[in-house]
Length: 126
Image 1 (cartoon, rainbow, N blue to C red):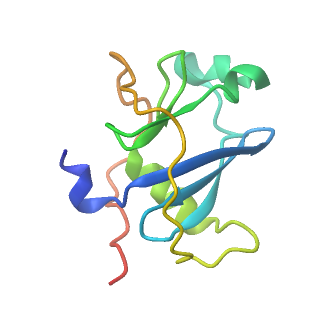
Image 2 (cartoon, one colour):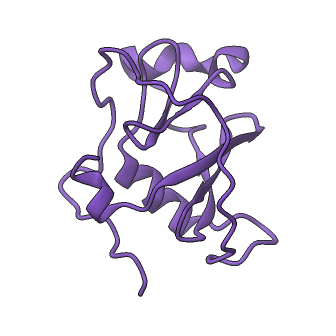
Image 3 (cartoon, rainbow, N blue to C red):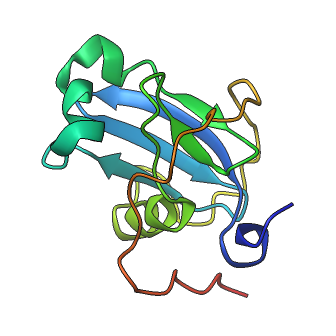
């Protein structure tokens, strides 16, 4: 367990929807959409413009994130913020579904490629 376990709910599912959009589900019931369409620039993320490469992400349980074979990954707080601000259509924020998908793998020696620049992650609802 790391420090993020105390501030960010666990990511339990990440499913490709279309183009550069991924449906994210967290263990507190938050279900939302991450849209990377306008954020695939720079050395780390530019290769993910290739749709087949973009779709090759996996759920990384150790780091509570999604990661790509290229070494790109995203901060768990950023994923949760995006899901909270962009609820998936047809789902309530607290759906209560806790089914996990994907292998439990570490993202290798990849560094945290994106973070929420200085802003605190949203407080979990109680």
